[in-house]
Amino acid sequence: MNDLDSGLDPDLAAFAALRTDEGQALLAELRDHDPAQELALATRLRRDHPAELVSAALGQARLRQRAAAKFGVDDARRMYFTPNGVEQATRTAVATYRAERFHALGVRSVADLCCGIGGDAIALARAGIAVLAVDRSPLTGEVARANAAALGLDALIEVRHADVTDVDTTAYDAVFVDPARRGGRGRIFDPEAYSPPLSWAVEAARKAPRAALKIAPGIPHEAVPEDAEAEWISDGGDVKEAVLWFGSESTGESGSGTAPQPASMRATLLPSGATLHAPLAAMLPDPEPRPVGRYLYEPDGAVIRAHLVAEVARQVAGGLIDPMIAYVTSDTLHPTPFATAYEITDQLPFNVKKLKALLREREVGVLTVKKRGSAVEPEELRRKMKLQGKRSATVFLTRVADAPTMLIGAPATA
Image (cartoon, rainbow, N blue to C red):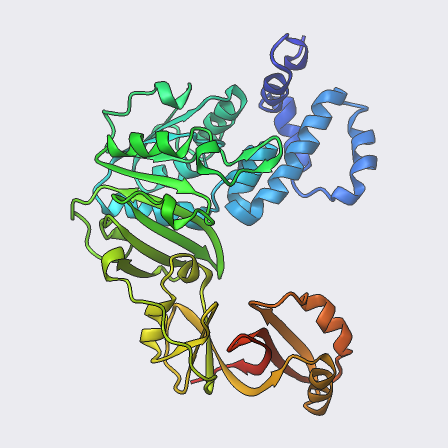
């Protein structure tokens, strides 16, 4: 009798079969398989292996290929995944940043509640932190346990199958909570509909010396507790998550080790690690709108989410192009890691024909379309341009003084 016929839960049985010698051999054979050739490959493999095991191995091989973007090829090839686990797991760069911040704050043990497949636990363990990883799903817990072993971190990661609300975390230096934010109908936007609810997670955080709660980047600012630091994190320009940090003892130094400051907002940009921070009581008011100058600054998404655009405007001696649009303009070029600068050559009322004529005259063959405050789809506009030429340009579809406007330019150079 093999594991698939043992009477176990089918998902657990399929996963257990993957960890047998036969399952491991199949996974090794499928490491670089081409999904386009999967049907023929499956037919061949089923001549020598149980059909259920072949299906499980093919599914795992597909998940590993998807996971490479988050975990890197080397780790993804050794790890195990579930479909939800790949979708919901933290990107390695972000998990590593957060683990290093915990470590810099003197944290040596963390209770990782709702650990999923173990992505955050792995990052914490690699930072030298002992982890209790808890999940209520038996399969997810087994996957997390297998991942800790596959990466040689099982000495630092204890995996427990339990309801996180029943776990005593008093023995740990910190708590990390990553509530489930997806349900049967997709993404959950109400923090109280998370599993567990945000209110429970906040109370659990307040009982710990240090804590971090992973939340959706779109959380309303009014939902941020007054005793928390809210941090938005982007990676490569894309906002990946928001974190609520609790615990204000100033044991950290600078950068990622800075102790969380209650009632404050922070934007952190990866991979550079540049961070912009402001207490709520000292946050600058929105800068005044002004005419478009020579340079346009596009703040990083984390800066926008953290409502720190005014800080960027102060750095570049600029103002907004419109009261409702998060583009900053200035007459001078100022280096800042928190925004991308463009030199603007033209400002036109929105008009497709005029834009097409201008691009043809400039011999633009490569056009980057950005928009903010416009309903026009970039791909649709690009198709209408019928571009030809060797030059490149960037067009911003936006609003200036509440009027639909096109700003044309290129990335600024010092």
